[in-house]
Structure formats: C-alpha cells, structure tokens
Length: 494
Image 1 (tube, one colour):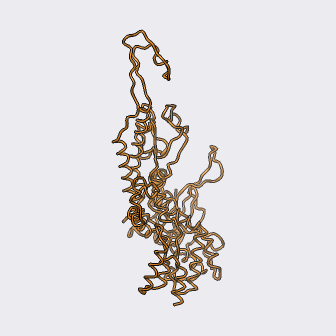
Image 2 (image 1 turned 60 degrees about the horizontal axis):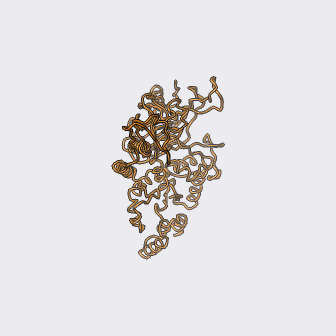
Image 3 (image 1 turned 45 degrees about the vertical axis):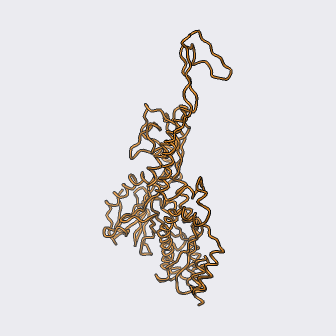
C-alpha cells in the first residue's frame, strides 16, 4: 500500500513509516487484542470445525472454547505458539483429548468492575458562568450522549477499556453540518444529536505518537477490514481493507489502497478522545484487567480439568478378573452370579472417588489469587459463602469490598476525564460550526457520580442538615445529595 500524504504537512507524516505501523497493527497487535477479547467472552465453536481434533472419546464434548488456548497439550491435544489461533493450533495425534473444564472467572469480574463504574446514571453539570449558556451546554451534551446510547455508550467504553486496557472514542458528524459549514442559529441540542461518538476496537487503532511527547498524538489511524455485502470470486463474503488517517488539520480515507476521500478538519485537532483504563506511564495503552488475569485463569482451568479427569476415572467402580473365562463380556448387575472351575480365580475391585484435599485447596487458593489480582472479591457477585457473619453492617460491607471500591475510585478519575474530554470535543465542534459559541473556560464540566454502595437516605439527610448548620454552602450540599440542577440554579440565584 502506498499513501499520498502531501495533505498532511503539520506535522509531516512519512508514508513508509505509516505503512509499517499499519502492517504491524494487522499482525502483532491484532493477535494480542483478539486474544484478550476471546478470553473475556470465552466463545464456543462446534467441534466439527476442528475436524479430527475432537474425537469420539468418552470425555470429549462437541464444542471447544476460547480459553482452551491456555491449557496444556496433555489435556486439549493441541500445541500452540504465540501466533496460534484460539480455536486451533498444532494437533498432537499421540495425545487423546481429555475432559476439559472451563470456569470463566474473568468475565464476571470484568462485569462487576463495569457495573461499579457505570451501573447507575451519572449527572453532568456545566461550569459556565452564564446560566442561560450553562443550560444550553448541558442540553447539548445530553443530546449528544443520548443520541449515541447514553449510559450504554459509557458501559461500552468501560468494557472495551477493561478488556484492552484503553478505549478510543471518535467524533463524527451526520447531516448537513458534517463538513463544518457555518450553522449559526441552529438549535444546539438538535445539532449535537447528529454527532456520532464511535468507540474504536483496539485492533483497529494505529496511533502515531509525537517523537517529543509520548502523551501527544500527531495522527490517528484506523485500519480494518469492512464487509461489502457481496461475494468475492471464490463465493465467500467480500471485504475491503479500509485505512482512515485523521490529523489535526486534514483527513484521508483509503479503500484497498486507493484514496477515496480527503478533506480539511475544521476542529484544528484530532477528533479522538483516548481513555486509559488505569494509568500506565510512558505507554499509550493502559492496564488491561484481562491481561493480568490470564495466567491465573489458565492455572484454574488446568486444575479444574485435572480434577474432572480424576473424578471421571475414579467415580466408577472397576473390576479386574483373573481366571474367569469371557470376563469382559459378563455384565455387572445386581443378582448376577458368576461361576468358574478355576480355584485360582479372583475378582479385584478398584476405583471410586477417594477425594483429594490438596487439589481442592489449590483450586481455592487459585481463586483467592484472582481476587487479589482483580481486586474483585466473590462477594461482589453475591457469593457470600462463609462470610455472612462479616456483613452485618454497611461499614463491614464497605471494608469487605474496599479493594474494589478503591480501584473504582481510581477509574473514576480516568473515565471521568474521558467523559469531560468527550463533552469538551462536542462543544468545540459546535463552536467551530457556529452553532453554539463558547470559550474554552465555558466547556468545563463537573461529573456527579452516584454512590458505589446503597446508602441510607435518612442518614444522608441528617448529615446534610448538620453540614448546613455548620455553614456549608447550600448548593454544594444539594449537589452531594444528587440534586445537581437545583444546586446550579441556587448558586446563580445567590
């Protein structure tokens, strides 16, 4: 692929360097990100897709799962390398596929983190000084978010960020104002509802970072394959390779290596908001929750599979017959009698599940290790177990969930900053098109987060009354109670 990048001159962009970055993203990065999402979802595929990989043995099931990638070959019958497909690998004919048990502890922990972060609606308050402008800003931001799913958009951002370690949100515009033409006098909320906030999958993203500042992005590139709703020459669904280059002053779009569109960027900045799941210094990507849990998840699945094989072998009584003719053809059933003339004949019984306490202890300790790594205890999913005595008060529940609450508080900083940047980007576009003129100071917002744990409303009201008696500002008290709109009106009236 050869790029014509003459339109990008501030800063300059090298075509050979871009082609290399796109090629690397399509191989190394794509494999790694695909594996992270596969471990979260733990997809299933029919065993027939692997041909002879799933044989007719008693322990085989008619499907394979994505997390089998991390199991040893002695269990799955496959050998994987770093590029090995999730549902495949090198078949080892000498190894018979064993009982495979997968318990996806990653998924429910990720879901719990997302629920604690964006399980309830957040309130966005404009910090503009003018009351009328503040109301227009809040209406515009709300319209833009609601047009893209509202809380569903935020939950999607959180899920992608937890899986990949980061999430990028791209701003596009549908309608007559897509080219940035002057639309002065238009309704801000209606104009904002045409804005598309598109979450970008990690394997599509090719950020071109500044050589002087690793936190700054000179250009943002998307590279992916897009379905064409048609068939190729072989009768398979056709797809085209799409490469989109976004710069602070211009953009381009290539399909199968051919330039199909380009234009100016009226914003004067890259219309992308980058959010790290948890801050990671000197890296574009943040910390992925799935990446850190994969080794322990593989250990858990290995021990569960080993235990299943042991139970399958020991849970049934087996018999060793000596000196009895056609013993293998004689059924074992109540009331059945055998006879033989051989005085040395014998029947030896063996098998039966004798238990393995060390195995159960190891599995329990592996689960506890996942609790420590993820900071999500089992109680977050409602699995109380023997801890019911520790949860007799709200304070005790808070202490039990302290690691999860602390991690959620950290993520409210990163994702909250991302929401603020999305709102600022929406307002910047409205300002650039003349729909709603704002100064940079007017585009600041404040996010009011809901409580992480259920709270006693009577206690909160009593606390608010005490704060009022101490002279705390009434608007601040109302905001803490969740009445952000009333707090804003009170501040302006005063």
